Length: 97
Image (tube, rainbow, N blue to C red; front, side, top):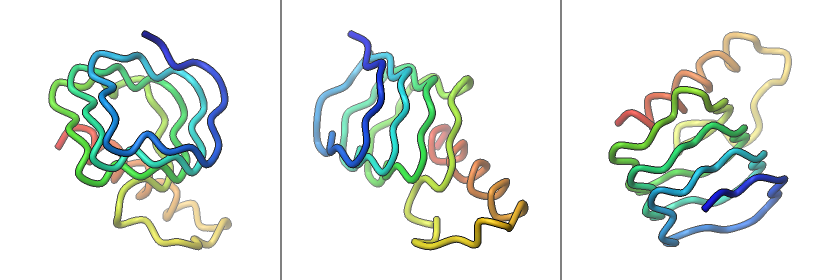
């Protein structure tokens, strides 16, 4: 199965998305507690919540992660390049555990 498209403000919390390819654009989407085992996350994830999601063996190499996870502040300074880079790095760390 493949989720390709634009998803804004949707919730996939506690859903079974194991093995699914997520190649769309996910803005303010909730994946908290979702089963993403073996999923391929190669889309754009902006302000997505992956708290307590199972990302075991998930392929996150080609995805773009901005302001993901619990550490990201609710209202970042958009002019802060350093903040953007740190947010992307935190998103990658969340994906690789």
